[in-house]
Amino acid sequence: MAGGAARNDQRRLAEISELAGDRALLGRSSTAERVADILRDRITEGYFPPGVRLSEESIGGALGVSRNTLREAFRLLTHERLLVHELNRGVFVRLVTVEDLDDIYRVRMLVECAAVRDLGEPPYDVAALDAAVAAGEHAFKERAWREVGTANLRFHQALVALAGSPRTDELMRGVLAELRLVFHVMDDPRRFHAPYLTRNRQIVETLQAGDTAEAERLLKCYLEDSRAQLSGAYAQRIAAG
Image (tube, rainbow, N blue to C red; front, top):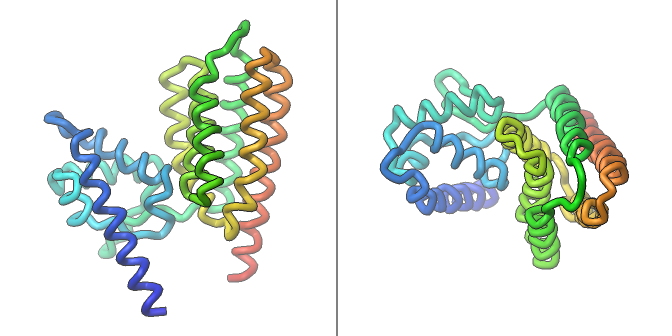
């Protein structure tokens, strides 16, 4: 147990050190909003799993920002339900509940299906979708499961981006970051992600053919199946105590 905890601590320190590479993204106009963007992206990419405490000293040092700026970024992400502040303990990545899961998929069903339904006349620019699918397929071959999950989320972000709505894009960034916290409940990421790689490719090909009705049908079934899988995993986790 002690060895495993030590390895987890070492891995966490290595992942936080990678934030130093994000410092350049802040530029001269370092803001809490931009820091929040970086941390949200890192959550979406699976770097910070649920329940992990976020160290002000480590993250602030890696990004080169003040404690006040970082605390404001934490406050913004707490408002987005990605983080939680515990009195006298610090800030932690939030543990998503079953109720959260249901609501996340309710939003996804409304937004993603509507984005596909209202695309208008073909052809559609599916380059970003295709790139996300290709990235997922490559990561799968490399057995890089975290990257497979990230590519899947990028696929859905690109799908919604077809609507051309900055507000919807912003909404989905938060929703998909929450969804990433749900992914951590799956004990076998290969078994979970593999079928959706194929289904992502099928949706891209259907949109390339200009058939939005079929693409929406495929997406609706996809989301229903994904929700059922994750709900089942949550039920097992709760039953196991």
